[in-house]
Length: 319
View 1 (cartoon, rainbow, N blue to C red):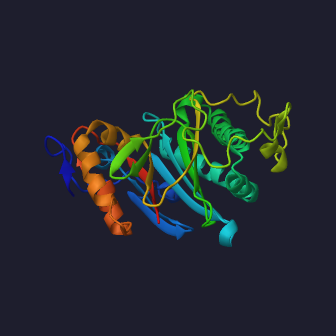
View 2 (view 1 turned 180 degrees about the vertical axis):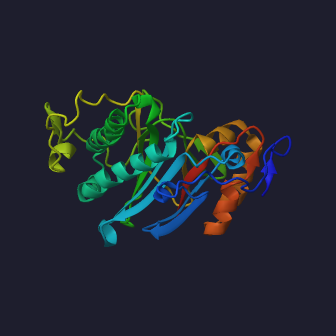
């Protein structure tokens, strides 16, 4: 396994210790590496989640979780990529991350038809408010689970970052949303652009069709109502608090030849902090053809001294 930077990392390049297993809780085990991919519309997707060098050495489970799912069929299908990172010091971090991905997956899956329609129509305001509601409710379930376990919410929580990719080849709108640290980058014309939305930003780069009058009432956004998501009294007491970290959202139109990269902090931090890693991935991912699964796994594992956390990444190549 290759590396870049001033020297080789401290830890071994390959897994050493397995996490401890409970014979009665084998479903709780987390694989060292998860790899997936697909091709829909004009984009090719590659996704990976890899246990970090530190966790491999210490025999700890991967705290990152990855979910890739297609909802619907044909050109009306919507692809979701969700990745979550559990709290560093929490013993159940891997479970919280997996639950965060499952909850947002269920929420998006039940609403996929309307979400796909709003993406095609460029209803930015509806998308942002609706996805924020779905995200908050998903993370609210984690807070409820923390209460059931008798632990503080901060001990059973996760950062959650997602991509929505419509299968319609005539729609190149790509939607990012989530809560928590990580990175959103675009490789365009051989240059990396850090397009992680700031807290004060609402959408970033303009999207064709966005900017029309808001389709909402003073009482709430149309997306939430049209999806049939009522706003009943909370089933939890006290009612779940909103996420402490700010909600982030960006919808932008991809160009042919772009590569969009969404990742957790395990890859975002070395990509921002080590120019040699950015240069290496530029050379690897600027080719006309997307890498195969094995090549993408190798690229995502290029090591940098001082960065030993789990790495989860999803990259989208535009034809």
